Amino acid sequence: MLNLLFPSLPYQRMLDPMWQQEAQQAQHHGYSVCLYDAEQQRLYQTPHPTWPTLYRGWMLSEREYRQLAQLTPLFISPELYLASHQASGWYSAIAPFTPASVFAPVHQAAPLIEQALQFQDRCFVKSLTKSFGADSVISSLPAFTALVQRHALAADEVLFIRSYQELSNQPEERYFAIQGQAYGAARKRFPVVLQPVLARLQSRWLYTLDVAYTASGTPLIIEVGDGQVSDTKEWSVAELYQTVLQRLAEQAAS
Figure 1: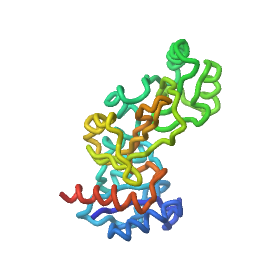
Figure 2: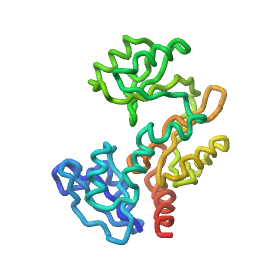
Figure 3: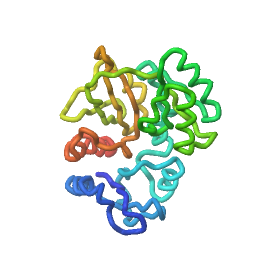
Figure 4: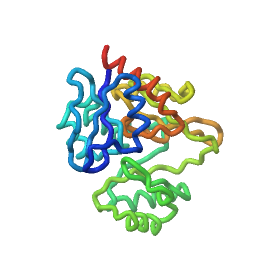
């Protein structure tokens, strides 16, 4: 069995409505449901002491996740959370299967972007955890300067600078993975050519893999994420709990 921690509304002992469906599924499967107020760093219920505790909620910074881990033992340690949640935790392990990239703080990024633009007319710039929407596609140094100003980026914030990849119109696929096994929505099979990725990321307990396809049909990993703070995308909540969460609970108990 599992303890599931869901976000409460700020300063209220009330489930955030965005997580209502998941809380109902958790209860349906016999898991305990607890609420966590990130604003107050407060748990509203005590997790079952002998069950592993999994967070399912909004994205947490490193500091916020470590604060939560101090309140209750978490099945996913802060180190494993960061290994999936931040690009610096996973990129080097799977570099051959994802667009070529480099890391640099904001104040050192311009020369690297200029170098990238010598080979392509665009590059993709994001933070370690998320993109900046349409602003992430950079075609000139003035565009990069505008991004920094528009998003008020600190000089020491580390950026993930990626080569631009033309993709097909085929929708991205989200796979939830438990160590060496990936699960797709509607039982879609993980691409065979990407199977080595699972071995390279096997130390991680619960993470997501976003797969896209090039214009020629070649699959590649666009993003890795922590499974606790990843949304369901094309998955139904019921299927997520019947497959991924159920399998995680079984492995945690073994």
